Image (cartoon, rainbow, N blue to C red; front, side, top):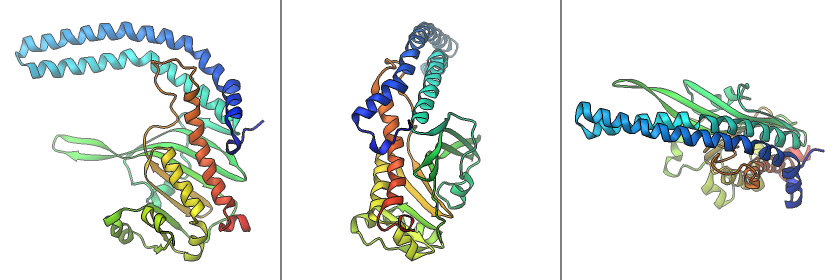
Length: 318
């Protein structure tokens, strides 16, 4: 039976966790303890090796700074090597757990190696900047109340020339969300976070016309642009805007922006790494690990529901 996240009270969440997620976390706890033991052994030997390297560097150059640099580099490499068994257990547990959660709510999950939905359109509408290198992970795909959806994490980088060659700078890291609605939109409507004194740059960069929101609080939070003023006012209603703010808060993100285009709502939220189980130095069978992930997914479902059911939405009245 598919779980409706909008109807998920504490009792239903407890059953979902006990039936689907807890057995996976408990099943991997033994592997975590073994990996933790390996980490401790490797860490001790790595720390000793880093100390020897630092001492050797000081002996050769008689310079504390060089010794510190070499010692720190050796310690970082040793720690990375020591963490490898814990990373392996974490990746396995994460994939199993998120597959179980996705199955419970009627969608699919891919850890990596997937085609990012509508990514070219995110860049075409300038919801995310252009990049020279991109990576994607944690993709959920499914259907909710007649709307197809996909959301995943993107990390976009641009190569920057320097005096000594080049480096990779992150230009976007966060969540990309595509929601496909049953009705095509007549125009393009873009919503961006209010940029204060820099709003003129957003207005200068777009050929769309600014849309007045009619709510002073929302006017302070967002800038809206569209080539169809009438449709934009139907789509950008207070219920939807409140859900955007709630989504940004839930994801602990910033600079949220979105666009209604063709038949899709495209959303980009800059933020941290989501859908992670947390520290491998603590017991796996902690209900809080699953609670945070399910809460993030539920907030996206609420956003879809807001667009479909709000009284002012043309989608709900057609």
